[in-house]
Length: 97
Image 1 (cartoon, rainbow, N blue to C red):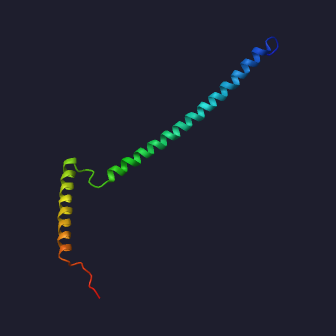
Image 2 (image 1 turned 120 degrees about the vertical axis):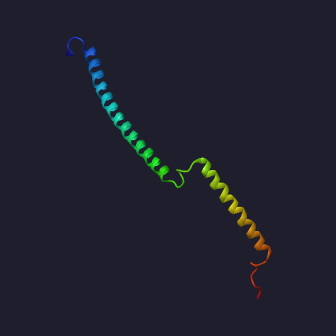
Image 3 (image 1 turned 60 degrees about the vertical axis):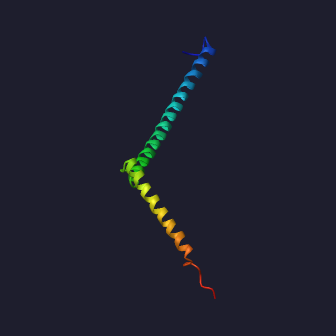
């Protein structure tokens, strides 16, 4: 189409054509950006999975973990009681000069 008989229509169509091609380039760039971000996200998810699997006691069931926690708390209570008992005996008093 030449601009001879309908110059405004020609300008309008050529502008739309240019604008659409710029829009396609923009969409291609956006698509590449989305793919890059998606790849980064997938990598982070995989790293997180590996960290979780590397955690100690992750293979223990929640019940086993509760039992271990109960045992550890009992040990802390026992040691706290012993510490209070020894403090009462004045064993930790520093010698006076």
